Image (cartoon, rainbow, N blue to C red; front, side, top):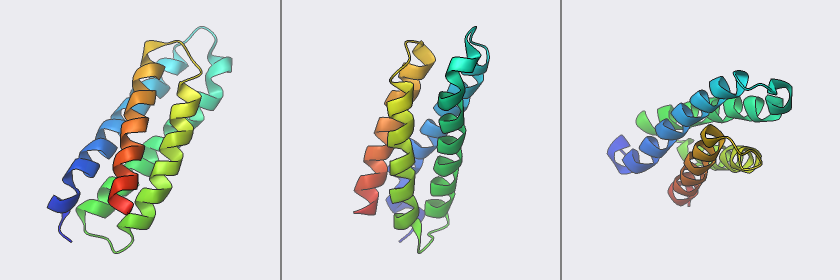
Length: 109
């Protein structure tokens, strides 16, 4: 399959990676940063998974579906963690993670 067939999922992964990077940076600037460590760690993991999935789809990897299933799982975990916080950057990140998880699950099926 060519990367064009994966374009909507690639876009969701790229948007999620950006949202996670922003969230991690914003969490580090929070007054109670110690309370945000779980969020920051998942943001970093999720961004890495999204970059990995996006690149796998772009190059037409035979493992793209497997990678996207893994990415969806990590995105769901990140969305759940970010959803526990009131900060707007966490809410935005949770929404991007949910959208990415949905796109990755659809692509992987």
